[in-house]
Amino acid sequence: MQDMAGNQISRRALAMGAFAGGASLALSVAGHAASDPGPESTWLDVHQFGAKGDGKSIDTAAIQAAIDAASEKKAAVFFPPGQYLSAEIHARPHVSLIGIPAWDYQGGAGSTIKLVDSKATCLLNITNARGATVAGLAMEGDQLGQGIHGIFLNKPDYGPHEDTFRIERCQVTRFSGDGVRLTCAWAFSIRHSMVAFNQGDGVRLRGWDGFLLDNWLSGNRGAGFGAHDENASVTMTGNRIEWNHEGILIVGGHGYNITGNFLDRNGACGILLVAGHAETCSQMAITGNYFHISGKNAVPATYDSCQIRMEDSQGVTCVGNVLHIGRNDEKGTWSPSYGIVYKKLANCVIANNVLHQGAIKELLADLGGHGNGLVVKDNPGSLFNPGEEPDD
Image 1: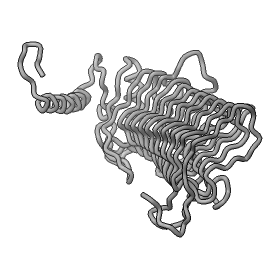
Image 2 (image 1 turned 180 degrees about the vertical axis):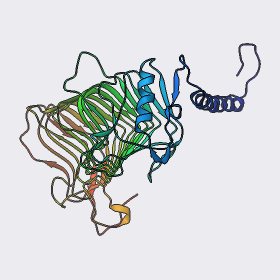
Image 3 (image 1 turned 30 degrees about the vertical axis):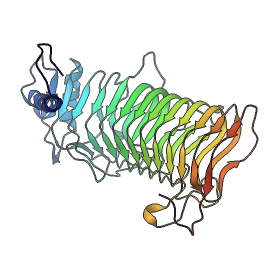
Image 4 (image 1 turned 90 degrees about the vertical axis):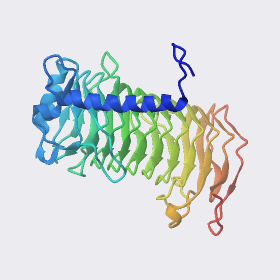
C-alpha cells in the first residue's frame, strides 16, 4: 500500500497507527474534560462541578449542574471512571453524557452511576432530551424501590419532532422497573449495550422508528424486548437475548426486521407475536435467528414452551431460522415442547427453518383459524427424546 507521496505503508504499521490514534483520542478527551472547562469548552467534567465519584458522596446536584451548564452550549459532559451515587437526573436536548465503559456481567465498572433514591421514578430521565447521547455509562439500580426504571422517556404524546436519542456502550442493570422504558419514542437507537437483570422488561417500547443493534438483553424478569402498546418500525439485528421471561414480545406491532439475533434460554417463548390494542401483528421479517432452549421455565407441553409463537398476524415471513432444544447448563428440564406455534395467520410464510432436534413434542403446531395466503413448507427437523444425547 502506498501513501500519496508514494511511500510504502505496511498493513502492520497501518493497524498500529489506527490503534495509537484511538488511544490518543481517548486520552485527549479525558485530558480536555479534566481541564478548566472555560466559557467556550465543549467538554465539561462533572468533577469541575463538585462530583466526587468516590462511591460515598451523593453527586446528584453536581451531575445535574454539569448537564444544565452543558445544555447552554450543546456540549458534552464527561464522567471520569468512578462510582457516582445519585437520585434522578435529567438529560437535556443535544447534550452528550460520556463515560468510560468497563462493565461486565457481574456489575458496573469504569464510569458508573448508582441509584440511591428508593422513591425515584428513574435514574436517568431523557424526556424531552431531543438529540441526546448517552455513551459509556454503567447505571446500577441496586433493586431499590418498586417500578423504578433505569433510563426513562415519558412523553405524553409523540410531539412535532423526532427524538433521535442514542444509547451506546451503556450498561443498565438491576432496576426494580424496566431497564429502558420508552413512552412515545420516535426515532432512536440502542447499540452495543447491556440491559440486564431488571425486574421489568429489558427494553420496553411504546413508539417506533428504532434500532437495537448488538446488545445484550439478559436476565430480565419481563421480556428482553417488550412492546405492549402501539409500536412499529423497529430493526433488531445481532442482539443476544437470553435468560429473560420472554425473549421478544410484540403486541399488535408492525414493520419489524428481526434478523441475526441469538435467543437463548428464555423462560417462555423466544418470540411471541400477539394481537392487541385493536391491531394484529403485521409486516414483519423474522430471518436468520438462532433459538436455543426457549420455554425453560414454562409448564411442559403448554404452548408457552416454544421457540416461536405467532398469533393473529398477517404479512409476516418466518424464514431461515435455526431452532434447537437444550437444558440449563446440562441440568434441569429439557425444553421446549414445541418448535413453531401458529394460529390465525393470513398472507404469512413459514419456510426453510431448520428444526434439527428443534422440539420435544411437536415441531410445528398448527392451531388453525387461518385466512388466505398461508404458506408453510420445507421446514426440516426432528424431535428430541430427553433420554437421548443431543447433537451439539
